[in-house]
Length: 161
Image (cartoon, rainbow, N blue to C red; front, side, top):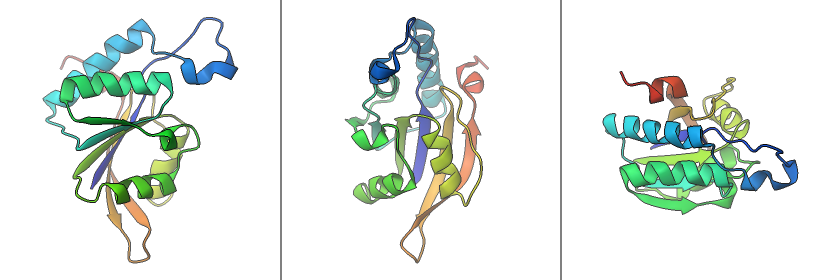
């Protein structure tokens, strides 16, 4: 199964209060850029059996933009909030055994650390709006392993070419 990791788009608040971080929305530029990314994903012919998103507002908004463009089931999953890891990915993959492709929308540094753990110990960082594709498979030991197929920066995903 291919698991795609999309970090939410640009988000900010003037007078940001860390106590309300879960409510921080995408900026207007973040919305515009995420719409451009969704268009690029459509041009690439990507299809997802399910789109799972963190409940934090900026991730949910990013996932909604992609789901509106590409269609597919959108599910809010509290396990994608900060604290996400490879154990959570394994549980998600196990919940969707017939799926060919799943999109996860969430946060750094969890996504980078999780991708790194799945592919055997690498340092990965997704910029805001970055997208990674990891081909997953179950090991004989019962653990989920992965191969990083590609890592796309937001600049490429939002360019016109």
